[in-house]
Amino acid sequence: MNIKQNNLIKSLKVQPLIVVIRLENDFFNIPSKRDRLLLNINNLYNFGIKHIEIGWDSNPEWVNLVSEVKNNFQSLNVGAASINSKQSLHSILKLDLNYSMSPSFNKEIHIKAIEYNQLVIPGISNIENFKKAVNLGYKIIKIFPASKLGIEFLKKLQDLKEIDVFFIAAGGMKSSDLKEWLRNGYNALAIGKELNNHVTDRDLKIWLKNFKKNDSK
Image (cartoon, rainbow, N blue to C red):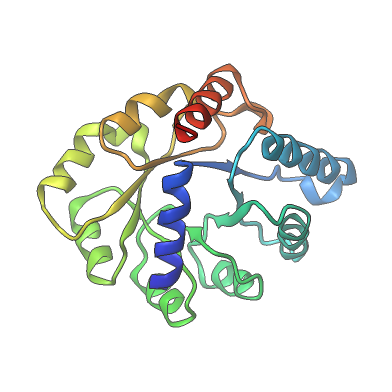
């Protein structure tokens, strides 16, 4: 797991953004929605997005969908969101994903994930679970829901002076938040439903352009 953590941290330092895609309830019943999703992912890729997470679904076809995305977009770092049950954990093992995330801290699930060498980044909303996650060896933590916990919660965690932790803000994040939240201590942001239809909005386009410009200096 440590290798996967280090690789993801390194990748997110290059571009500190994850776009989270959640599937609609009837997604697997309407073929055109699959085509639209692949088109949207292609557009995100063309705009320079490097990390995409696809929300887990209990439909057996979900594994094939993620596998297709991985094969079609090999330059993308593809992960899975909402891994918080044994069923969801077992379904991603065959995909050998570089990373996945959970909305909360579930010690049993995280211990199993570590045994399988599967990186399931815990979602943390309080100091107690943060300490438990660190004790399990996590060096990358998702703060969720970040929009409600705010920047002050991050400062409380940083004051604990635990190991050097890489923090991802997730939950209610908007592309317009990127500059401020990164400037105030978060290492990366995950943007989901606030990015309507998984299409780059004006703020995201500006951020990507400026980030690419600064990165090339």
